[in-house]
Each structure stands twice: as C-alpha cells, then as structure tokens.
Image (cartoon, rainbow, N blue to C red; front, top):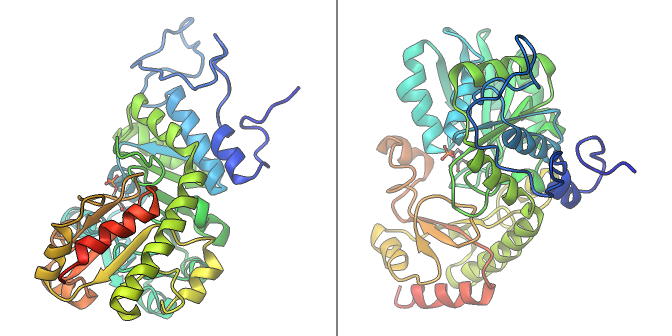
Length: 389
Ligand SMILES: *Cc1c(COP(=O)(O)O)cnc(C)c1O
C-alpha cells in the first residue's frame, strides 16, 4: 500500500500540509519527523555515505520541512534558512555586481535596509517603484535588470501587485520575479502559479505561527536555479537548526486551520473598525472599499488577519496601543496570539523619515495582526481600548 508522503502530492491543501514531505521514521516508525540534532554523519567508508556528510549542507528534519513547504507553494524545490532576511540575502547571492533590481517601494523595512545599507556596497543597484501600477515596473527596467522583487499585500499598507502582470514584465526583460509571500501564505496565494520564479517567506510569521522561532523559506521550480541556491545555502551557511526546522514543520500542519480563523477574525475586526471609524481609515484587502479589492479576489483565496488603521496622530495611536489587554503591543505578526504595533515607530523605523512620509507610513498608523482567539474577546478588547478616543 502506498501512502501519501512526498510521492503523491495531489491531495488537497490540508492533506498536504499534514503529510507532504514526511514519512514515518525508518528506524522506529515514529509518525513525527525526528529532530536530527546532529552536526555530522558517520560515513560507511571513504567516499561512501547515506547522502549526508555535514549538517550545514543537509539535515533530514530540515529536508522534511523543505519538501512540505515546497508542496504547499506548488514548487519542486524548497530551501529553509535561519531567518527571512537570511533567506533573502542568500537569494541575492544569485546576482552579481552591476546587476539591477526593481523593488516595490513598500516592501518590509528589513528588505529595504538589506538592499540600501548593505547590498548597495557590493555593486547591486536598486530602483524602488509603486508596483500597484505594473507599468511602473516596466518603466524602471534596464538592460541590467535581473530581478523584480515584490511583496503583495505589502506590510503595513496592504498594497497589492498584479502577480501575473509582474511576471510577464520581469520575463520580457529576462529578469526573475521574486515574491515575498509572508503575509498571504500559500493557503491564500500561490505566486508560482502566476509565473513567479522564486517565492520566499519569513517562516517566523504564519508558517510557524506560534511565535517561538525565527526562520526563512524559499520555494522555486527551476532545477538550475535550485542547484545554485543549494550551493549558496551550503557555501554561505544561513541554515536553521534542526529544532527550529521542526517547529515550523509542526506549524505547517495546522496552517490551513489557522489561516481560516485568522481570515474570519480579520474580516470581523475590519468590519468593526469600519463601523467605528469609517471605511477610509481601515486598510484591509477584504473590504469592498479597498481600492484593489477586485485584484485581491482574483489572485488571493482569502485576506487573512492583517489590518492597518489610520488614527491620525501618534497620541491617538498610543491611546489604543497602551490600553489593549488581549492584543499585545509587539513587533512581528502571524502568530496564534493577536498583536498590535505602530509600524512607523517600530518595524519600519529603519525607513528614512521622508520615505515614510511619501509612503503614507504615518505615526498615527497602527497595524493589527489578528490571532486565532475568540473573536468576541478581540472585539471587546478593541471596544475598551478605543473608548475616549
Ligand atoms: C518579518 C518579515 C520579513 C523578515 O523575516 P525575518 O524572519 O524576521 O528575518 C520579511 N518580510 C516580511 C513581509 C516580514 O513580515
């Protein structure tokens, strides 16, 4: 009897989330992938081994995670990294001095910081454009452009990019489309299906989902590109430890359940905010008033639990942030517990102040990561935190 492990990935998302890439442990039958907490592997003879030599290159726990997330994204190859930024840094090593990158102007603050403060020093060149309008990507392409980097929806302004259009433009210019899929997760959006070449994640967020580790993931289809990324992974070494890989693997088993609840709670909280503040202050792609709601419905299967709210002033933001009792004031997102933050003063503090102004990243903007608690408790928490505003 054949069972679904990694040979048959035709099952629906929830089945793949639980089984893909994982077989019972060959020595004991343990149903959970063991944490192979080892740095090296004993070799059978000179030049003879079981395919494992040293744990920077390969680790069975990490491989189970890589196959699992690859199956969820619908890609052939998965690679696990020590953090989202470690993952992106390794992806960037596919390029060389003189190459040009077109990047969304509202990407994660750490992505901008890596490009602007570090990689620029190595001769990579970057243009930042508003990728909501695909023509802006086309206009920024040069003969040296090798990569188009987008995030959709963006953090924290929830701007969307048309994935199919971006892939078409990138490929016309002989560049790779690389997509940060941290916010949507493969449960709601699969960039490879729209022609993206590499999809990557901060696994720290929804993939892990329990706020107990930091990690990154990349998934792609092209075999040559995969060979190069595997080489970089081993050569540069930004790999996760086996325990962290195992924690993400445990997280992905419930990704579909968690995302359904994040989405339900997100919709209810967004609706409550609209009733309280009016729809022009609430930014959530699931709202019909979101300027790109139609695109969201076309390329996403749900909208998740991330909501941004413009309260107008830093004082009003502080009023809410300091009164919440179920939501916690913290950076990060995507965990089972609800978090609330002020991007301009926290996650996006590394974005220069004039760029923050251009983007609409004001000090009155707060961002909610709706967890999977009972939604009535989230609503009454907001009710009391907004009192007197
Ligand atoms: C957190 C985050 C990252 C960075 O990932 P780390 O795991 O913190 O290194 C990148 N992109 C997005 C959208 C994020 O939210």
